[in-house]
Image 1 (tube, helix red, strand yellow):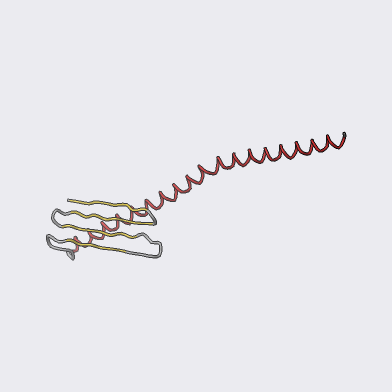
Image 2 (cartoon, one colour):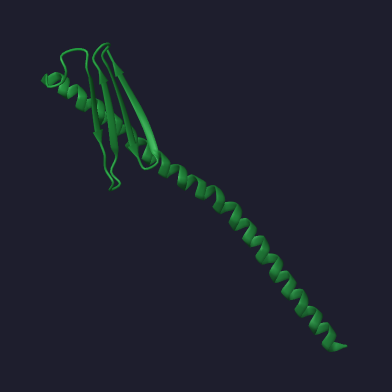
Length: 119
């Protein structure tokens, strides 16, 4: 009779241990899922800012060329493509003289941002 009670106490201890481990695992999962989503969102925000600045740089390049006078006099399309395979931001720019309009797309990682300038 004494050995039966010891076996039941051991079984109850194992059952409680498994139950507690399951509860701790559920709590850890509930905490880690939102945290991982926030980490991904932070990374995407950084890529978005970098892509925006790349697009803005494309606009600045065309404006600089216009001020220098090295770009079309009238009625032309001007396209600049900066490509990179080493993880750097890239942009492509289209300039239309009539009406004066610049469209620049910046890309970094999987994020693309577009900037328009017209006057």
